[in-house]
Length: 502
Picture: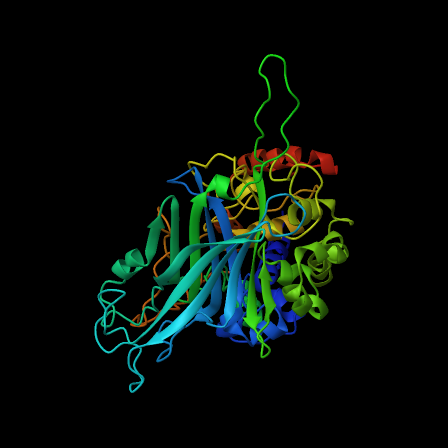
């Protein structure tokens, strides 16, 4: 491949990781107002950051494999030192994670968090009046509590009646042992675990496209734009059977009698935020299943409507999935041919689940959900590119904290599954802060006392070949083709073919 070709592919990676912001009418905004995953992805929610649901994760718990961990984040781009009020959850909203376990695009189970504010002393401007050594420390002047319920049909069960939220990490002097506060905010009741509080934003990517396409000479790559920013997180770990449904029992067999019904192992997951209106009714203002959908797939004119819509309405967006804008934009700007349409491969990824991987049983109502097969074995050594690199427990089969969804989405939309293999990416392969190995897995929030929470770490080189190598460390062409071939077989029913790289 020529150097110019490498340069074009590299530019495509940079464009896809951040340049789509321009198509949403947000070009030129600074780093604290950029779009990442579903951070500020639509005009209305950009002005309502407290209600902005940024990411949803769902995966089998590696240390408790009979359970599933669900994580949802709100209020993006939290500057760690952003006092004196810092970053509470919205107290007039419903924060929901929905589970569809019969593929009808309707919520069969909803986990709902609601929050309440508490002040000890309103005659001070301080968030805390001294070092905070426990969640119940009297020096924590402002704190929140939450109520968590499970809604199943017409029945509502209270899982957590009243528990403390882990506060914003004001700084080392104010909270000398924040890990202790995190532990106190992690609750266990029976086989269920719950955590609610601030965390370091687990999403990672490079968004320096605003600096004249990464410095004008494509030298500014490989820097995690979200490094040093926090989010508000809810995390829930529940037994797998709490999420599944029972399918009809098979016919009676003469040798075994009536066989027991078995659960459908695939569930669809999405989250919503519903804000309380003046009239007292809750109105949905944010929605998120798969990452990057509202940014990359949905056009500007429909972004607010998508955030307010239900999955049962998603068939209306089918044409934007089968004929996506991003490949056409890349072709127009960088002269790299777009894959042929209609894109049936994207329909399976975004709307129905992939056959043999995470497609539900029976009749399916096409809808945008994060689908997870609860029986897929936990990967001993996870690969950041998930399914397209042979790790079938990774995205799009659910989403783990370490899945590199920007690189995955870019490679797939550029034809990785339809005969156009590529190794494109933004040069950010993992989070700047290590995740935990036990619930809630999220990294501790960046403290407000941090001197430089957002350092720039450019690779300082305009070497396209070196950049391409840095995107996929240790992934040889043959190894990549093995993983891609595995997914190609799973997608066989969609008529998707592959060709080997030259």
